[in-house]
Every structure is written in C-alpha cells, then in structure tokens.
Image (cartoon, rainbow, N blue to C red; front, side, top):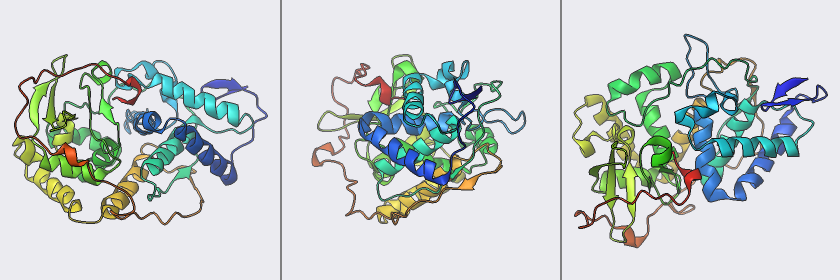
Length: 342
C-alpha cells in the first residue's frame, strides 16, 4: 500500500505516461467547466499555495501536494481552500483509479488548465514528475498581503528564485482573473473583487486609471478600494500596489521601473502580457522541484497568442471610475461566494 493523492491506494497503480497526462488535462478542463467562475480563481490560488512555503535552506515545502495533508491544509494562508483541494482529489481518484498521479502534479497541471481556460489563447509550458508528499515539516511562511515595500518582498523572492518584476506579472495575471477576490474570512482583506474580466492587461490598466481610496477591512487591515458609477467596488491589496508606487506615493526607484514595465503592456496588444505571464507562471509551477526527473509534457499547440480583438479585455461602459467617493462609503463585507476568495 502507498500514499497517493493523500489516500491509501493499491500497489497495482501504473506510473503515468504522457498520454495519461493528456487525458488528465482534458478531464481537468471538463471539471473546471462545470463551474468555471468558481473553480478557476480557486485552483490558480491552490497551485501557488501548494509551494508557497518552499524553503531551500531547510528543504521543506514545494509542489508535492502536501497542501492536502494536515497540518498544512489548516494553515491560515490556506483558509477557504480545503473544499476545493479535496474535491479535486476525489475527481482524479474517481476518474483515474488505476493511474499513479502524484497530487503535486495534479495541482500543478490543474493550475495550468485553469489559466488556459481563463486565457484560451495562452499555452503554458509544463513538465511532470513531481514527487509525492513525504515531509510535513514545512512552516507557514508565505508572503503576506500586507507587504507594502519591495524590501519586504525580497526574502520570499530569494526563496522562490523570482525577480520582483516576475512577481508583479504573476500578481497581475492571477488577480486579473474574473471573480478573483479577497474574503475577509480567509485573509483578513475584502470582501471585493479584483477584476470582472479575464485580463491581466486590463487589471493593470484599471490599477493605473482608477482612483484608489485607502480604507480598512472589517478586521482593520489596510486595503485600497475604488468606487465606480455603477456602484461596483473593486479593491487592491497593499502587496498589489507595491508595484505601482505612483498610486500610493511609495518612493522606490526599483518599483518605478516595475511600474514602467507594467504600464508598457497597456500600450501593446494583450498578447504581450499574456506571453510573459505564461512564461512566469510556468516558472512558478516549478518552484522547489530542483529539476529532478521532470519530463516535458507533449501536447498539441494552440498557437498561444491572443490579440485584443480575439478575447475581450475591456471593462463595461458603465464602470467609468468615479473620482469622488460616494456619501455612503461603509464597505459591505458580506461575501456571496467564499470559494473564490483569498
């Protein structure tokens, strides 16, 4: 007997082939499409949180599916994820009872499929071969949404092997998913959406264009909100606006350079941002794997390029930003869909 996907399974399972992963990819696509609005943002969050505590010094954490195990699933940073984690496990076990997928590979591939479902002209390079969860000694140590300087981000970037610019691109693409949001019950921020369309480029445009009002969540955490003419409220986290120093009057030459890079995407076809996000997201999925025995996933090409005309990334006409805050600015912290929120 052995542990696979967090459950005891027979030893008769076969090791997965590329064809098995092609079938798994299609199955995950069908699974996500059963409730696309709910599952996409949640699975993308899960794909990062499975590796969020990677520590190259202690050799703990990494994308091995340990998020499905206690005590890790109960970490505060994973609030709101457990139902989706176990539902994904059940889906794969029920549909592939004889294939020895590790849950690290399942979560990682599910993240790829979720992003490609949201951004259908994007194709993310992916490799399989992550080992199963064998060490539960990882410490809850992911970056906080309260981060408000690049200096505070740097220890995490060092651990992950990412640059600040790459983290900015990851943030824009992930928080640019329609219905991605913060839930005060999970993270202490919110509860408002980050975006209402699937577009990292549009998330950047809105961040630069809208008037962001500093406010506090119901538990006292600083967050930034914008109030639109149709009474929609969007929000940004302090860790979002680290990369937009002109928005918060944060003085940092390095952050200015990152904002300039992000702003440059707003003057290009959306494919410019999408391709860079696909590259960085692929890199993120391999944080903590040390390249051991990973195998290139071979799949048909979908060309991987979108233009502004092939996928809508505009906000509705009635979401023109209102530079004045409505008289009643008391936020409503009731969340309609907890499963979407960080």
